[in-house]
Amino acid sequence: MKFVAFERAKQGTGASRRLRITGRTPGIVYGGTGEPSLIELDHNALWHAIKKEAFHASVLEMELGGKTQKVLLRDLQMHPFKQLVLHIDFQRVDAKTRLTMKVPLHYSGQEESPAVKAENCLVNHVLTELSISCLPKDLPEFIAVDLSGLKKGTSLHVKDITLPKGVKFVAKGGQDNPVLVSVSAVSEEAEADAAAAAAAAVPVDPKAAKAAAAKEAKAGAKADAAKPAAKK
Image 1: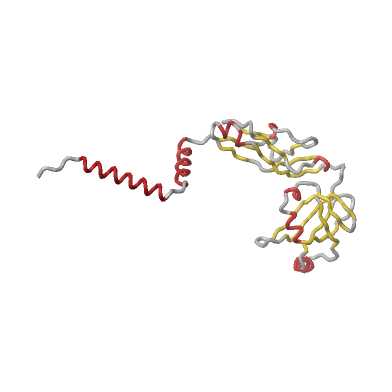
Image 2 (image 1 turned 90 degrees about the vertical axis):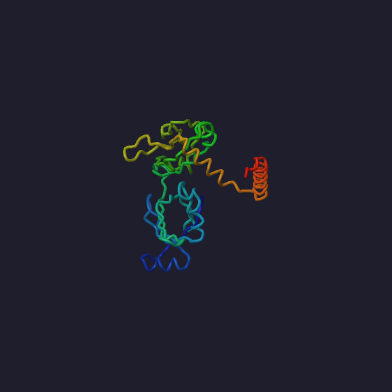
């Protein structure tokens, strides 16, 4: 994914504030063999870019001063309540240096799994991203995880999936094999409540309801007519 950055001459709170007023976002590029560089980006273009998953979890090509260099997004500071990027940090990428990144997990196939299709279980996505280590050329935009084999009473761990070539899982907090997905059975009471809620959500046909009421009233009238008259 490519984007354009421009060299920034001034720094400081006041300079950054004035820059944002003109529709630009201040930033910095650091790491590698070069010195840190002050940069600025067009805010509108940046706003659209940060909505894309690839901007957060892949090696980016930044054009700066007519030259292209590979970088990674490292920090993004947002305004507390406005749709405004206050500052952005990038790190230069060395092709021979391993990276440590968080990569999103893309789950698929759970609706076809025995756990859901045959056993009516709930599938819980415990983790939505994974910390990995790899060379820049091996960095995946995401990791696909197939859940079509899930069964009742089971769970899926990191060691149960196959990571892309050159990618290693980075354990944190002593968890070398964390749970990615867990499967839990739905109780009979919960199933009954869900069925009742589904039935209540079905829209009522006014004509059908009126016909049913008339039929019920007619049946009641016949029953009353069939009763023997009370003696005086």
